Image (cartoon, rainbow, N blue to C red; front, side, top):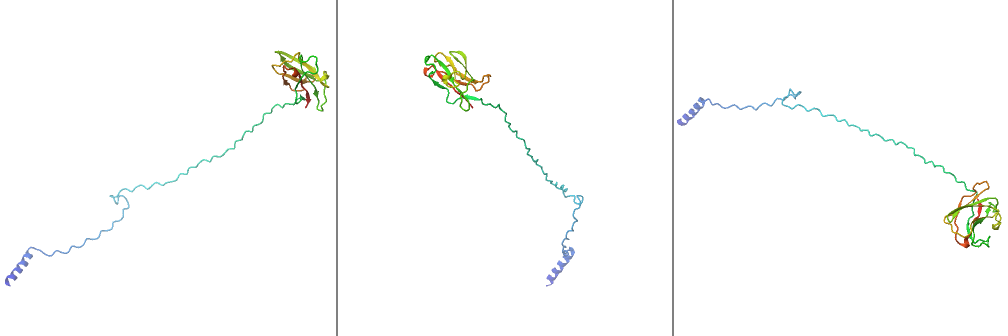
Length: 211
């Protein structure tokens, strides 16, 4: 018992000699003090410089030009005046010429070739005193024959006759027949016809009628 007390007292002495004393309890760290916000770059040198403000987008309105239709005058085709053909006073009677056998000169039979006929006014009356001209060629020989209406009564009142040849001959080129007045003015347009080497067609009957 005395020994236990001795050792307990020794431990107390040793502890007192080493200066050991119980460690005080450490206080918790103080909360951080709030820092004032950065007002400029100098206040917070660690921060990056602020970016420049974004550019303001201003929409551009493109004006499309308006096309204005311009009225263009359309040229009017003006008809070109043409010469007006005035009808001649007389024309060849429809259904002529007629090709017949010579009956006015039976003694000549086929040894004759000619043109004959009459001229009628609008009332159908035969007319005398008009000139009939036939132009053409037979056997390459040109000829012009002239007759006056009313001088060949064998073909009726106001009849005319022109002898073309002393035989029936076929023409190589057409003849033309035209009616004139005694003053030389044409009363009809030229009319073309042919002849044939045929005794039954050696009389060519051509009449004129007033329009």
